[in-house]
Length: 638
Image (cartoon, rainbow, N blue to C red):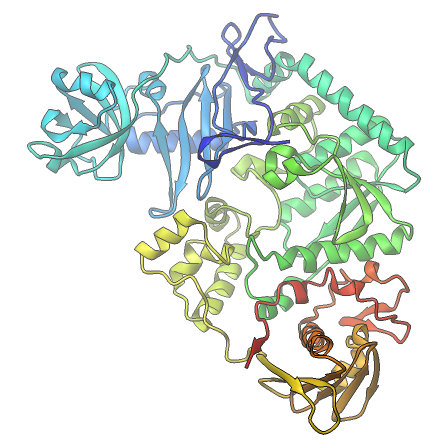
């Protein structure tokens, strides 16, 4: 169960990170596996999902400190750990030399990475830029919690601008770090707050330990953590063994091309002679991911069972609009629907899938148990052997196995999924422009087309505002400050619906009547059978009549829909369901999520879902349908 800290920062698990001062390496335990000595815990900001920094990460940090302070702070092949922390975009604490040196964050206003130093970083480098010197009289106030006031400034680097990160010196001693509130020219002889101080206390970093190569560094990390990883590995293997012994279902591993699923696959191969590899190709995979999937399957001699959504995303984009964190229709259409069909085809009784889920990834995953059923893939039982592992545990295991991991991690991506995933940070989408310019261009063009046709500016797309239906407060405030509209205007082609209800004076009973804003395709509604969850259907060229248990519904080519029942509640309920089913028929992309929900096998896919006469009108297929769940419009009563 997760715990909470102040400011809403969730503790998704334990802070495992310690540092061996003797060996100069990070250790996930109180004792170092190399020297046997005691280690010191590193204080971090939750959620504590630490990972090793790659060469690209270190180069990026050094590029920032070189630009901001005129010097590099990290050396090649020294142990560096990153820990993701809450922020409106991507932000990592940088841990090296036994302390948190500062944070790297991607700032949306400047669309660039910025290093936020702590006092430990100031003591570890010799800055020639970004320096503010204060007189001795100001030192006591600053160290006691005050800001740097302009009258106390003796000198300042001439390039400093308001908003820059700076190091505050008193003589030759760094005493604070913070953000400039005015340009250099205004600090000298000016008045007011010159620097808003963020850090004024901190320790002294250890001397950096240098290894001869990346391979030598990784070997040291593995040795220092060998006893920790042995315990975590044994627990995961015992979990896999228990699950296999208590399940009669076929055993599979869901592989995504990411580090977590690779670790789970290798753990399973330590227990099982063979295991099938499930891969849901969403049609939005990085080329490197596709290559890695086949490399892994070939390396370990495994059977690949693959679904392929092909162009489903692009075909559905005009129907649903850009996906967002709170409306991820893309997962259902491109991944979960095809995966459910794949499992139904290859494992009719369902399957047990070991999945690379970890509690440190999100609050939802922290709340989840180690065994679950996905409501969108009901024929799959999911189980996570690495639920309690941090990313650092995963990487140490992969390093020890010399595993063929996805090369995208080496170029700065910290998570691997669909290349335009709405859960991606703007930082990663910005990286996409450099690593995969053609993919970036295609998505940018699609976003700009949507923004131009829905009353939104280009900046709505550039700032990543498409990723939320309701942007988080900080991002919404930024959009407001920049005058950027975040709510799209309805499309002129939207199928709108209004309804009314009341007594039938001539024949008695109650009718509920509604009308769509345009005519309806009666042959399509009839042939698809998608009205059958409402009841038995009778069709002509101009009307579909649906006989339900409590109401009869007439659906006309003109767009009129009339529901008749004995009371108003049943009539309105039938009309509302008819409206949803009609929308579903129009928006159906043939994703197939509904197929495993049908208890009588009445649904097949022929470009869209087709429901046969075997339908019993149970309505279970509607539970998971993204066309119903993510339809942004509701009935308006008149």
